[in-house]
Every structure is written in structure tokens, then in C-alpha cells.
Amino acid sequence: MFHKLYRRLIEPFKRSIRNKLILTMTFVAVLPVIVMTAVAAENARSSMEAEIMDTNRVNINWASAYLAEQFARMNNIIYSIQISDELHQYLALTQEAPASSRFDEQKAVFNMLNSVYYSAGNYVFGVELYLKEQETLFTFNSMESRIKAVNDIPEGYHELFTQRKDFTITNDPKDPSKFHMTRSMNRFEDQAQVGAISLEIKWAEFNQTLELLDSRGDYTVYIGDRSGRPVYQLNASIQPSNEALMQLKDTKDHTGLIRTANEYVFYHDIEDTGLKVIKIVPNHVINESAMETMKYGLVVGGVATVVSVALAALVAWRTSKPIVKLANSMKGIQLIKDRKVERSGRVDEIGLLEKNLHGMASRIREHIRDNYMMNLEKQTAELKALQSQIHPHFLQNTLQMIGGMVYSQKPADSYKVIRALSEMFRYIVRAPDGLVPLQSELDQLEHYMLIQKQRFASRLEYKLEIVGEIGNGYIPKLSLQPIVENAFLHGLENKPGEWRLGIEVAADPEKGLLTIQICDNGMGMEPEKLVEMQSKLERITRHTDRIWSSGTSIGLLNAASRIVMHFGPDYGMRIESKLGQGTKVIVCIPCTTGGESF
Image (cartoon, rainbow, N blue to C red; front, side):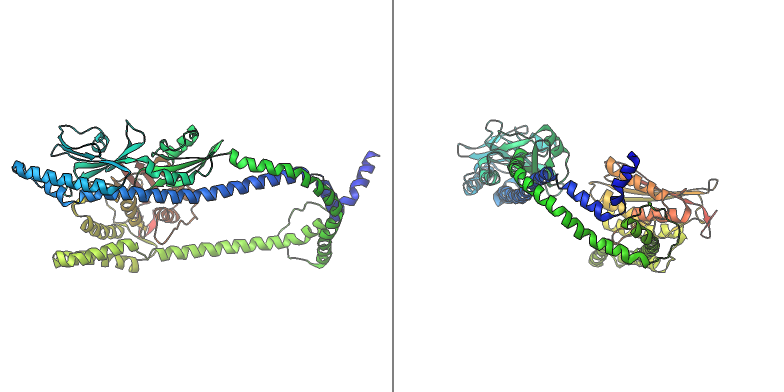
């Protein structure tokens, strides 16, 4: 009997979506108090949060730019001292110069410092000029002006010279309201540090800018060091949390937002100073506005409940009417079925739609598969187009270099470079697009490296070593040049000192394997970036139908993908790297004959 009663109750709703919709909307109508209050509060909080975030991002970007201009203005004072004729004439004096000449030049330097000091503005307390080779320290401020012979590096200059920095900003240990802005003087010929210029400056110079960011007492604005710790702060009542400091220390972004449990931390680097401008906004600033909204949400929600219940039936009726009409009109539609589809077994209007539309879904799947194959063919065509290009920056640099060689070197030297560039173009245009002899690919690298050797002269050391017989080895066209280009772009260009690039080709006929190792002594890769790159190479091995292409040049992943596509997952590319020591890329291909694998 209970079963019959249950069936009688649910039967009207089982066969009619209209009845289901009326019941559902009526039931949901009793929940608007909770829903509307929560939504209104969250919307208010989100709106306030978005407004505060947008406003503070704009303001802190503006403040950072203005502070950078102020620091640049101070830098200009230092530069005016560095380029002064008085300083250059004093530095030009030899040990044999008479004492009268030294006295005259020292007096001229003092006059120059005096002029700079009084023209700098009220925020500059003093100027110091330290000359390391002359063991001399000039000091000029409102209290004194003197020259002092020093045997060791004076206090305040140790960080600059011991760590070979070009620029430092340090707080005055005796007066926290001041800081010292010190810049190194380097000899042009060998960049050796020959001295330094230091300005003693008031932090109060930046108060007006920081006060504009601190629009209410709950906020805190300060200037921090590279790790985010406060260097100068107007209001010390609110300090950044340890979580925020840890994230500020680890971040590599120039600007951004850090959210912690209790605060929003906005930061932006001050250009060319190693400092950040940081603003802290507590969470309660945003949450207070949400609480106000919740008080009115209960009233609005109560009224909404009454209105919603009254309108539920009307809305449900009018909403379901077109659905019922559509279901009735689709009874005569028969779509072609390409395979049997499991249905849910519903007998209402939705069930009718399901019965007639599953064939349409099958057709859509066919179109998706066709579209996927078209995209795959398109990517393959793009790959062939990529193979016909040379990196535009490399071509521009080469042409500029040839232009300079025409006027400065022998015609034969210029001809060698032009011939190498011509051979590279001939190889790209005329060589087949598939597999090419490994020796042809190595010859292409020789032309590329001849141009690079001409560009970087004695700074670049290049070595090619071939072990064994590689005459029958084949490789996808332009697989090695992208790896060598990556070595220059990401490894060597940012590394000071000597560059070394080596290529070693080893044949192992017993294993039927050719191994090509490309090593450089460049900057290396960070561990996270190395793991990411290794993971992508592993995915290429697992998914041989994936074509990796990016931008307008052939990338390392693209080259690895083509090797796997030609020879299978047993071959491909590996990468090893250590930060600061260099990178090694290992390419494995089979020993082949006439382009066919053994």
C-alpha cells in the first residue's frame, strides 16, 4: 500500500517536466533569505576587494614610477660629479706631479663638490668622494669640508667594493631618518673599481609620495629592500606578516599582489634601485562593508520569499511551455544513428529530447574528429613553413656585421661570412623537408658557427668532435641548429667571461645508435625550469603524434617531437643542466642507411 501511495505521488512529476519545475521553484523560494544575504554580502565584499585592488595597483605603480624619478634625480647628481672636468683632471695627475698642482686640483674638486652640494636641494645632507687608488676621501657637508688620506676602504663602502656592486642604498646607522646612496666609479678600460661617490639624503624627501598612498590610518606604506623588509616606514603600527615577507623574498615579479590570512600586500619594484614600495591593506577594511550589507539582506530576503512563492507557479508554467512545445514538434524528427547509445530511460519530455538528439551528438563527434584531423594537417603544414625560416635577429645581426667588415677587414674575410650565410639559405631552401644526412646538418652548423665566431671573436670557443663513422646517419632537417641557438639565447648571451660550446658526435654500430651531445658553459637552468623541460620531453616520447610548434621559429621541443615522429619513442632528446655551470642536450638517433632505419 505504501508503494502504491508513493507511485501515485510521484507519477505526476515523473511524466511532466512542467510539474517538476513548479515543485522545484516553489521549494527554492523558501531559501532566498540565506542565499540573497550570502550573495549580497559576497558581492559587496568582492566589489570592495576589486575596487581596492585596482585602485592600489594603479596608485602603487604611479608611486613606484615617481620614486624612481626621484632616485634618478639623485643619480644625476652623482653622474654630474663623475663627468666633471675637475675630477678627471685630478685623476689624471701622476705621482710625479708637483705638490702645487695637486693642491690646485684638490681645491678645484672641493669647489665642484661645493657647487653640487648647494645645487642639489635641501634633501641632500652631504657629499663624499672616495678615490681608492689615490687613497683619498673628500667630504663636503654643512658641518665640514675636508680631504683625508685613507689606507683602507672607509666605513660604508665595504659592501660596494667587497661584493663588487655598482650601486648601494644603506640606512645611516646613527640617524634612521637619513640614508647613503653610493655609486661605484669604474675605469672604462677594464671596469675596475677606482672609487665611489656617496650622497647623504633625507628619507623625508619621499614622505609626500608615501602619504598619498596611505589614504587612511588602517593602511601601511613603506619602502623595503629586495626581500621586502622595511627600510623606511612612515607609520610602523602595522608590520608585514612573516608569510608576506617570505613570499616577497621569493618572488621574482617586479610588481604584484600577495594575499595572506589577514592582509593584502601590494608591491612594485623601484626601478634601478633594488628597493620596493609596499602597501599593506588589512582584511577588515574589506569585510566591514560586507557586514553592513548583511543587515539589510535579511529584510530584502523576507520580502523576496513571499514574492518568489507567488511567482513560482507562473514562471514555471511559462518557462516549461516552449520546452513542451519543442518536445512535441520533435516527435517526427528521425536523425541517422551511427552506433547504439545508452539512454537514461526517462519517459518525460527530456527523455523524448534525449531519444531524438543522440543521433545528432554522434554527428557532432564525427565533425569533431574531422576538425581534429584538419587541424593536425594544418600544424604539419605550419611545421614545414617554419623549416624555411631563419631567426630574424640572427639574420639582422649577421648583415650588420658584414656591413662593418666591409670597411674594417679584408674582402676575403667578408666573403667567407657571406658564403656561409648563402650556404645556410641554400640548405634551407633546397634540402628535402624530411630526413637529411647527419653530415649535411653538421655542415649547416659549421656555417652558423663561422658567423658566430666572427661576431664574438676570441670570446667564443667552439669545438666539433666526431667519433666513429657517421656517413650513413640521417636526421630530420634543422634539428640541431635550434639547440645551438638556444645555447646562445638562453645560456651564453647573459654570461660574462669566456663562452665555450662543444658538439660531440659518437657512433655505436653495435647498438645501432648515434649520439650527439651539445654542451655549453652558459647560465644553466633553474631546477624548476629543468624539471618542466624534462617533463615536456617525456610527454613528447609518450605522445608521438603531438607536434610542438611555437612562435615563428623552430624550437627545441619541436625538434624533439620530429625526431620521435620519425624514429619512434626509443629515440629523441634529453637535457641536463646545472645553474651557473651550463647545459647539455643529448640527441639520440638510429644509425640509418639511405634514410631508412636499421
